[in-house]
Image (cartoon, rainbow, N blue to C red; front, side, top):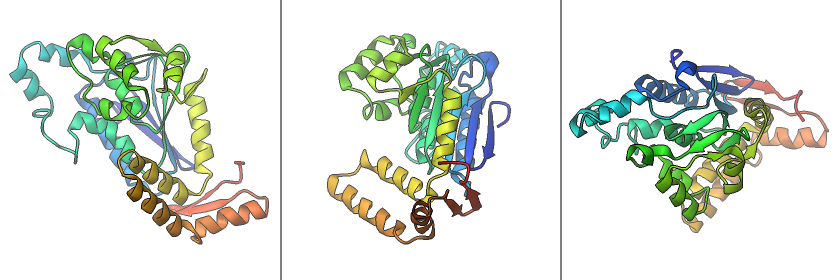
Length: 280
């Protein structure tokens, strides 16, 4: 995993960094494997409170490695054999391997913030969409670039974009492959906020989230993930179930007592206690 992705965990915040800077963090076979391995590792981390996903060097992620396009040019059989034994195989639940490199960040039980600078093209753009939030540099360049190569966005992009941006804008960008800026991404709804230093701001927000009741944060992510899929009746039932489980639980009581006593809360999780005394 260290060849392509590095992971550090401090005070409940995991910083996941794409580490193929010489190739602008392009997605090759090893990068797909490393992203999935990092995501699976973090899904099982009991002390995890929040995640920041960023890229080293000049870019967040330039998209699919050029070598993959070269194999596609050799014909359908060669290309199909070179991509995980065939894209049709559901290798990770509902997803194939490439889709799961994006979808795994939705399955991580805590908030994920993508810090985007430089470029986020094609698969790199879809990787950012897998996060709960996207903090983007104003001069970042983003694109649903697959049409340039005669392809469609196929790393969960269609499923994720439809909940963020007007349908006609998604269609325009998908059909044209037009490159747009971080400022335009914010105006359209792809970016959560525009920041001069997306990584620093993402880490600051992740630390803030890490200071909240971790049980409530995880419950909130479950609710919000399901809200895009469930009917209203099922969603209302889930809200109630999550709230009933939280009321009177140790961390919820600690949140109440900390507010009443005007002090920072000290929450516990499956991996121990994280002191939030340095946070508001």
